[in-house]
Structures are given as structure tokens and as C-alpha cells.
Length: 44
Length: 262
Image (cartoon, rainbow over all chains, first blue to last red; front, side, top):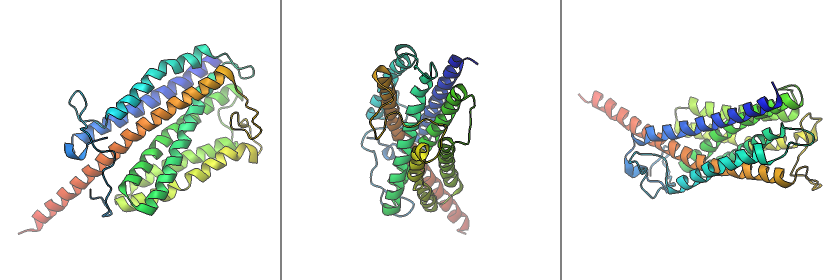
């Protein structure tokens, strides 16, 4: 692989992992929010 | 608000309605939406600076562009570990749910970014050193940091009781900052393949300047905003999970009592 291919691979892995983790956290939050009364989930 | 160990957790991060503009329940709030928008707006600039505006390095060539993601990753990981360390001390002192959730949230984020640090570093090593992995002091101590964070998560997952879960993970959390000090100093204490410090040098002989330095600082600053955004959301996920756990426990106790009643 060329240097550019390695560099692009590194960036893609990082972006994909961060986006996947962000999506996972948001999805877990949405799923749990439906199981808890609104008065217990009032965020600042 | 009542928590597992019988102490008050206060009203953490709680004053306004959680429902988003679409009406769906979320862990978002006006503050997190502002932080999220800042990160999204900065991303094109991060890519432009990292791939277009900055020149190739005189020694490393184009591979220096990997460092614009490697260094922010490790900085976010270190800060997350430091937050976990402080939260662990505070939990052992105060025994409050708030500090437990801050510590566990930061540890999870720290493990993700430590993994990214290792992967981006291995790719950079493949280009620069011709090998993705060497049992070098810096690499080995970073791997150990990652294993500590994985152990932290595994211990929490394996402990059904909230109090013992918090206590065990807080003890592991205390090991994070000493390990980071070893990671940071390893290139000076032992003969290392990894290069010496670039920015934080005692002789003030910085090895980077101009637009490359700005790009490094800017991508790290965006990473910090992302860390704060993630901490808010992950904290609220943990808070909600505890409420669901309490509700399920109450329902199970009520069901058992109903069965026992003739």
C-alpha cells in the first residue's frame, strides 16, 4: 500500500469508529428514555 | 433522589425538558446541541487543514497527516482517563452515583479513543518504521492502558450489585493516571523506538510550528469539544440505565411478594 492509502485508511477507521460510537450512545439514550418517566430525565 | 447505596445523588445535569424538537425522548439538551453543532461545523475545516492546507513534513512526508488524528485521539483518551481518575477518588470519598457515572462514562470514552490511538499509531508505524507493532515501552504501556480500561468495563459488567461495581471500578480508575505518567515518560526512561516529545519539551525546543502546529492544536480542540459532548450524553445514558435497573428491581420484588402472599 502507498503512504496515502495508509493515511486514508487510518482516517477512515477513526471517523467510522467515532461515528459508530456516537450513534450507539444516542441510540441507547433514546431506547432508555422511553422506559423512564419524563420527570426523571430533565436535562440541563 | 434515592440511589443504590442509600445516599442522595442530587439532581445531576437536570433542569429542562429532555424531549427533542421532534418530540422523541433523547439525552440531548440545548447545551449538547450547541456542542454537537460546533463539532459538525469544524469537521470540514479539520479535513481541509489536515489534507489540503498543511504541507508534507520534511522528514515524515505525507504520513504526518495521520498525526493530526493520532495526537487528538491520545489527548482525548488521556483527558478521559484523568476524569475517571478524579471521579474514582471522589466516589471513594463521597460514594455518590454522580461520581460513579462520571467515572464510568469517561472510562468508556477513554477506551474508544485509546483503541483509536493504538490503531492510528500502528498504521503510522507501518509507514514510518516498516512494522505495525514493536514491544516498545511507549506502545506496550499504551496497550496496558487500553487493557486497564477494558478491565474497568468488564468488571462493571460482571458486578450485578451497584455498590460493589462502583467500588471495584473506582479502584481500577486509580491506576489510570499513574499508567499515563509511565506512558508519557517511557520515551525518556527507556530506549524507545517512539520519538521524543514534540510539543511539551522542557528545553522549549518545539519540533513543530506554523500551520502544522495550528492544525494539531485545532484538531485537538475539536476532539475536546467532542469529548465534552460525549460525556454529557454517556452520563445521561448511565443515569437512565440506573433508573431502569431500579424500576426492574422494584417490579421483581413486588412480583415476589405477590407470589408469597397466600
